[in-house]
Image 1 (cartoon, rainbow, N blue to C red):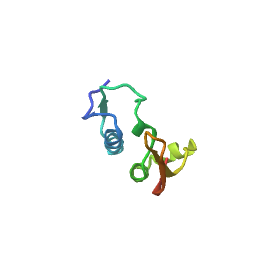
Image 2: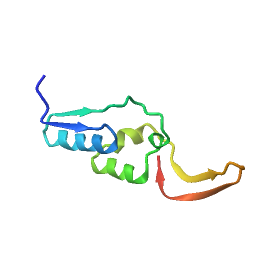
Image 3: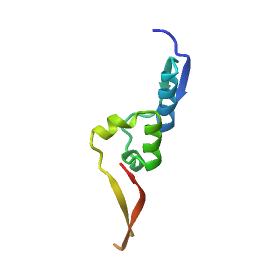
Length: 94
């Protein structure tokens, strides 16, 4: 195996988009990540509208959209005493 031209540190959203862009430019890329996937965190379970835009810019949203993600259009927040409030999101998230 040939050595990579570039090593991307971190396989989060920014690292993956960087790797995709480099691969499309003809570079050999290695990604180094210290954590295992999937990650157990809330933000890892939602793709923001900005994230969707970024995936579309690098032509990578199609495969995710083809899986039929849940479309999030509103959010609700609860307090410890059970009160809640809901708002419409300004843009759809997945």
